[in-house]
Amino acid sequence: MAPILRSAATRMAIVGALVAALVSLAASCSDPSGSQQAGLRKVRIQLNWVPEPEFGGLYAAVQDGLMRQAGFEVEIIKDTGGTAVPQLIAQGVCDLGFISGDQILTLREQGGDLVAVFNVFDITPYGFMVHAADAPESIEAVWKGPGTLACESGLPAIKLMQAKYGPSGRKLVPWAGATANFLADPTLAVQCFITSEPPLMDLQKVPVKVFRISEAGYNPYTEVLAMRRGGMDDATLRRFMTAHQEGWRRYLAEPARYNPAIAALNPAMSLEAMNLGAERMREFLVTPWTRAHGLGSMDPRRWQAMVDALSELGVIRVRPDPASLMHWVLDPPTADTVVTPSGQPG
Image 1 (tube, rainbow, N blue to C red):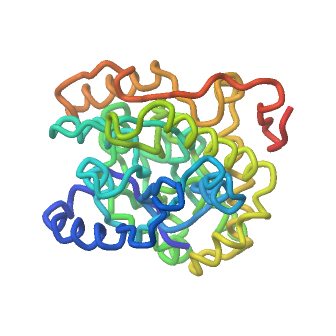
Image 2: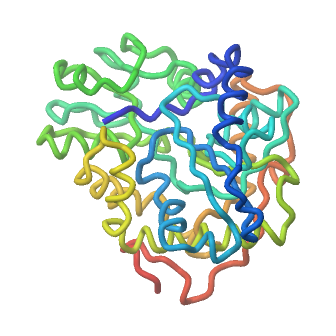
């Protein structure tokens, strides 16, 4: 299974090639088909990775025709790793894109003005994965070693570990998602997306133990759908978000209905792995907060915690108002639109 990497450092490393990317992607995002003549608004959405269950609600909304019913023709543009998605959104190359919450903050430092309109994971799926045999008892013990830890050292979550627990006792090496290295080294700990790499290990009958980054007291918004401020008026955004949120309700209720189409777009990930990953996702999306406020909704206090953490780490210098980082246009759910942890309304 391919890695899922989310750090601002990884994204910013290719800014030098942004002009060429903009030209290429602008051409791919053009709309010569005349969707406007059909009365549909063309909306281009850039993924920050290849098609996987973490985008399942969007694919469900398109597959079931919810987007067209709401007046949109949606083009989903997949990534293969390394696309500077925040910059593409800020430049208007695409209308919306999936990025990490910290990227909204770091781009604002550079003069960009993006807002989050939907958050996929209420609990961050970032974590560390180790072999189950002789596994440490806590995330602090994982950090302090001994052994080797494969990770993206530029991730705010990794910097937080350093600030909270001191220098790692493990040797830090780059992590590019090569699970073969993990399989070959029983002492290796790796950064992971909990809904991606651990399910793959389970399917290969490799016992692992997973530690959530949130156990260290940092629970950032990891996968948000963002747009330029003012990129859609509220009435249009409400129509779009209603369809997107309903897509997520349907996907969580029956992921096996939608995963075959997603798997066809990503042959590197088996349908079996997608189905298992989707099952693991539910507890990260369906929480007391989202049951009360709606799938995709965000808490300004969580944004404030991110601002505080990134400021203390020196990642950002300006501390924006947390309410300015998000734009939520949907009402709280009613009894028939609440999704339970099992994925069913109720």
